[in-house]
Length: 194
Image (cartoon, rainbow, N blue to C red; front, side, top):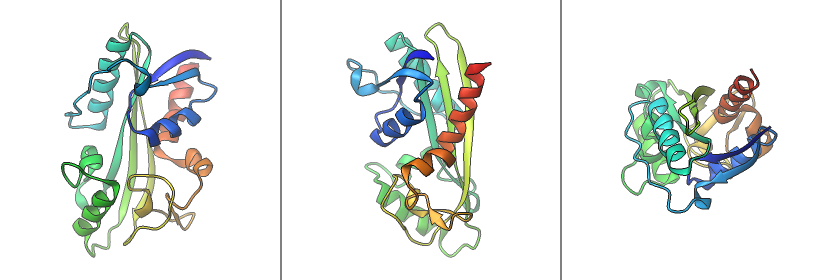
């Protein structure tokens, strides 16, 4: 088991999810809140990979510790992959989960193609320059309206046909088995063992 890793996110939903998923891989997960004035990394990449690597590189250099960053979001087929890297700020400055979902549903309108996927790219960067990048997906469809109280982000409109539930309606334990983050982490764990 590796000793510790800095998790390059201020999103407390992601911190909770990753901390659980990383049990048994790292002895300790350090969140950005535990670092002294970490730099704010501007996510200006055109791909999830660009953004994840940029965050991991900058924060690994700053902290001097092994750093794990993710960039993740929602890709909707009928919207040519939007919101994509703009998922968190899809509805503009000051975006909230609710305003992002509202914009998504307006953009989709009555389009019958509701296919979508959550994408997660993980970048693990050592301050000495070693890098490992993996990605995971979770396929689903976009609902006409939100359902469920759990999760965060687009979870209330992300429908899982094989379960007949939205991501916000399944429990955290179940989500941790099937999510895009979980699928990316499975690959990361496998790569770290080789």
